[in-house]
Length: 296
Length: 314
Image (cartoon, rainbow over the protein chains, first blue to last red):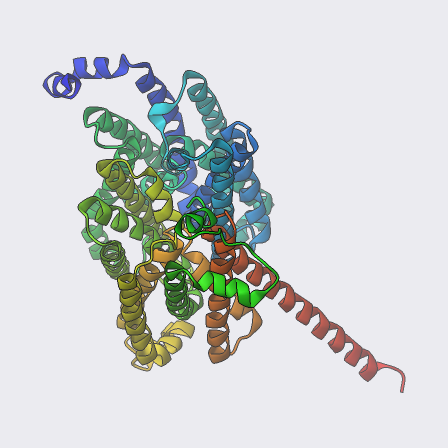
């Protein structure tokens, strides 16, 4: 009760108080890396019009996690294997590495159905009380990360960030103009597949922070805002990453101060607010400047 | 959620058991009032969702439909928190969300579709986040969350069936009224607009219908599995035929069969209805895709044989 009041009166002491809890430290460390990864990957997801893919992966994350639990394996094994595998498979199935809406819709609805079955398996094998597990996987539990879990999350997230930065330049080229890029010898198809594998990895990461159902917001909102704020690709990419990290920090702090707010909600609320603000800032000016052309 | 067999066993002496006598099985199933309600509700929902889903797949608005479905979750969670009926939450949130999506300008093919999908994705995630906030505020219905997300047909009341019927008939009536111009506008926006069809208005009305269909389906399938009734039957039918009227009839037929089968099987098994619903619908879709490929291959062989005959030595 005193912590939020203290934070309002004296922000520095309040922040010190907040970070004196180990679980807050873990949440901040893992959350920062995860947000960085989702912001960077999300920029390309939005640029390539693959938001729907990210959404489908969120559902796969749910089923993968519960399948692992039903089999008695670590939840994260199922999570990452399922996400990366399905990301690659969807890339291979769809035309030119961009999966088709209806195909994705059908596949992920069925995969969710499977998840429900695994949930039932898990519930019967553990004798009831399945509510909390599914809620944790679907909506995240970033305050519940242990020291080891946070370290693994940060490590994998860091790997995803590095991998993305390595392929960023050709990927941007291929995303903006696929025909020219492939004519210039850029391996467009391979890049598309590799990128979807990275999206899968990032989806698995984000599931641990905000949950399988909400990771889409962390992928789409900062990137959407960045695309509205600037037309320049590299700047937009970093703005997206920055907004994502900002949402994570602000959300974690907000939920610490007001305990009725679940952290996943606060993080998403800040990210959504950023997006809404970006519309408010840019909408009238753009319309006047470029009357007919749609935003890039 | 935890299996109907157990629940039914509590309700009446002798848990239901599957025999080879189909008539006896059906009689066993229909002996329970809640099961009759579930079948009635499932039928209404399958017809409505099938017909509206057919247009949705044709218009490539699967993503919008999915978003509407997810928006139903905070609606239902909020209604639970405030002590209102679930239907009020589903319909209220889905219809308002449909209006919001309609207000965002729909970008034509190619171009800047990415901006649109980012909006939908954000709305969707925020809606779910709001849902979990309501759940948190209400406290202590962790098991209810699963029912809201993945569906349950145990507690369909008579009133609910009546509401579903009214909403379904209303939505289908509107769809019948706008069906022809909507089909035109869905197939070729530009030509339709040039011919004076109010494309924008039609699109908005259709999104409202979609909202209503989603709200209906959510009460049976839960917010996350709405696709099983909204997309899969339509996608199946559109694999099999290109003729609009026939494929629409097929869509409704597939939706009905899938719903009845799923409800029937779930009644006799300990596993949730959502699993059976999605599995049967997905199975139909996979079969349809396979059938189309087989037909195309056969046609190709016939064509090449015809060519051989025509160009062969004479």
